[in-house]
Amino acid sequence: MSTIKITNIANKDNNGGPIVTGISTFSSTEAVKLPSGTTAERVGIESGSLRYNSDSNELEFYNGTSWAIILNTDRGTNARGVFGGGSPGPSNVIDYITIATTGNAIDFGDLTVSRHRLAACSSSTRGVFGGGYDPSFFNVLDYITIASVGNATDFGDLTVARRKPGACSSTTRGVFGGGHTPTLQNVIDYITIASVGNATDFGDLTVSRVYLSACSSSTRGVFGGGENPTATNTIDYITIATTGNATDFGDLTLARRELASCSSSTRGIFGGGAPSGGNTIDYITIATTGNATDFGDLTTSCSRLAACSSSIRGVFGGGENPTITNTIDYITIASVGNATDFGDLTVIRGDLAACSNGHGGLS
Image (tube, rainbow, N blue to C red; front, side, top):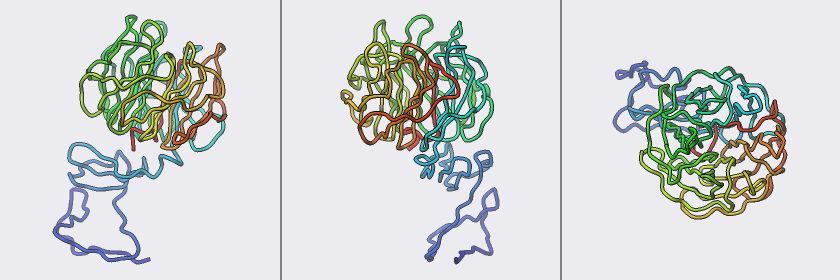
């Protein structure tokens, strides 16, 4: 293998790396190796820098303000799904799966506070759990590093303490919408996932509701279903990088609450729910607007479940019907059809939350 060497370097960046300016041509049938390091090591890096992130397996670019992901090599094959909290208990249990495989979940660690009826969102490195109930309403935000195992760490607070909002995210920003305080909420607030701190007001949903779910592409967040005061089929959407009120998207195939959702970069999936959508799975094309379309069925009718995804596969875990379960099943997002058994959570529970380091908002 041939190696291209740059010698007699006159211009260097803050880390001693070469700065190549003007028109430079490299000719080789082999490869150019980029600088590589962990997320924690990207300190003092200048605008315009390109590097490989060894934590998240991503090729990333720094624009002087934030990091943009150019390529992720791990989202289809090695993405990890994480399930946190739930009832009975309430629970502080966190467990995880490798989404591309099948099998039972493995213990990850504990949330900072035991609670159920919470929500979760994530970047390619960090998962954030927000809100919840036991028996008071929580504004707690805590986070984990998805690729590792261990207990969650305090992140900050939501703008409003509430149970069962929906949550979604892009690479940089997490968004929580709706919930119950005990009055129904239309509030949307957001966080910058890579930092810590309190959430900031984003805008309002089109309809105040609780027990909704959310999913996303890299640009758009979509909130579906919920209760106000009965089950609804409402779908609305936001542009994650901005702030402002949500806009009507269309309708689910059935009005339902206590459902779960996940996504690839193009397709959003909504599964389960009460009172009549127990095994229903339907889907939307996130970049458009319009009503959802039937996808297939879960392996069992279930509500109060949670979902996460890679770029290829969606996974639904836990829930109740009417007894609480530890069932996990999966679908292939780009196709249609019924779900297949995946394995079991470490403990039976409903009203839990899930996130992953490979979902559609990161593409």
